[in-house]
Structure formats: C-alpha cells, structure tokens
Image 1: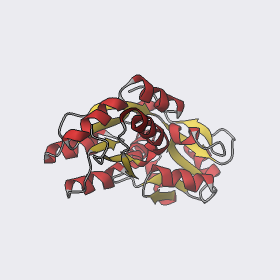
Image 2: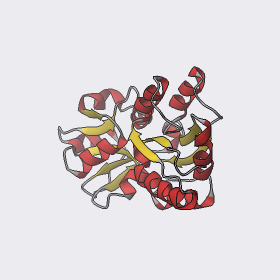
Image 3: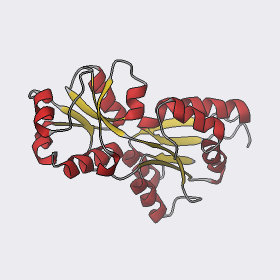
Image 4: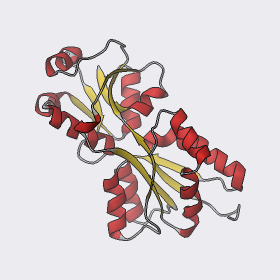
Length: 226
C-alpha cells in the first residue's frame, strides 16, 4: 500500500481505545497511517451510505453492517473481529442483584445511562435484555439515552447517572467504574463486531484486524474473541 494514500476508518465508538493502538501498530508496519472516525455504528453507516469517504467500516452489530451490504457499498463480505458482553455498571462498587426492585432501589429516582435504544447497537442490546428480563416497561422512564456507548460510560464515570448498561470492555478501561452485575448473554443477541472494506484499499486493514497482534490488543482492552 502506498504510504501517501489516505485510509479512512469509520469505527464504533466502543472500539476507540483498541483501534487507536491497532492503527498505530498498522502504521508502523505498513507506513500507512489510518485516519480514524468514531461514532455510533448507526451514525457511521448512514454517513457512509450518503457518500462519506470511508475505506473501512467497523460495526458493533450485524444490523448496520447488513444495512450497508444491502445498499451495495461493501467491497467484500464482513469479517468478525471481536465480541463483547453487557454489564450493569456504576461509580459505586456494591453488587446489584438482577431483580427489578433492587435496580429501582439503586436508581433512587435517578437515571440509567444507555445509548439510543432505537438505533445504537449497545442501546438495542440493552433494550432487548431489559425486555427479556421483564424490566423494560418499568425502567423506560429512567433511561438517559445518549449518542453512543462511550457517552454512556462518561456519564457513569462522572456520576451524572446512578447506573449504566455498558460494554464490559468500556468498564475495563475506566478504573473508577465498576461492574456491579453481568447481564446473561442469553438475554440478547450476540455482541459481535464486524469489519468490512468500503473501498479496495481498505481490505488490508480489515485483514489486519483479524491477525494475532491485533487480536491481542482487543483482548487486552476487555473484548472477547470473535
């Protein structure tokens, strides 16, 4: 790949810490320094559909990757690169029983941070989990819906909300935030990250994300194997 050629990577916000390091390693090895853009997968997919200059798209769920495949912008089929799990998190470390009365008591009239439950992958997973646990109707008035997973993490970190539903990987990078309950994985669709090339020059970076060195970075930041 020519070192003068720009490579634009659009990636889910929850991947930022890991992708930053992986992209730096990629630049060292190839001489090609990716330009990284982070946001909710939903926002990025719509930007790409409307002509944003992306070479690579990394999504936090199958839905938005399938959307771009259906509109015909993918150069190659997507590859699974990592997975994740959902947790209840708080700035206070006390464990939380996964029972509605306990959750409401911990909220104490406050808010539960989640990304937008209508479109952002973490929000979709969270709403699906709450629905399957029978909690969604009671907790909907307490939801503080935000633009992306990283925004929800920041709200928990700053104490702006009593609780948050976050990715385990986000909690792993924030020592001041604690996992207080794990959401059973059977309560939601698998949390699988996928990457696909939007242009021919994106294929090398997508392939790099599946290699051992990149996978080790994902694992170190709290992600799970694809």
